[in-house]
Image (tube, rainbow, N blue to C red; front, side, top):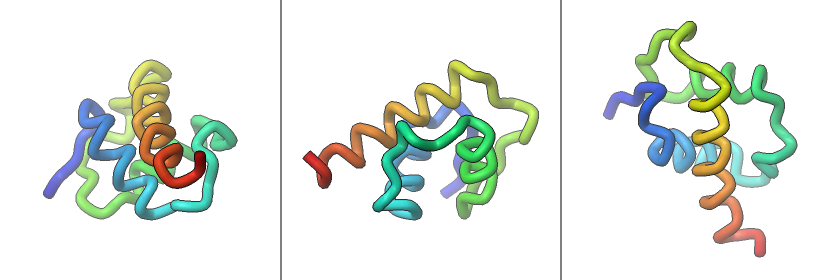
Length: 70
């Protein structure tokens, strides 16, 4: 499976699987950007992200994280 910036839900799930103990709200966007680029199957252009996309990814990750931490 390949991922691109516009697949926030799938990226959020992958980030949760990769970093299950990290509260997504504590991650800086610079780190989030790097972690997304490091995901297996991520093929998006490193310059193709913006604050809105990163925020959508962070919120999708947060939803996954909340399922196990509330």
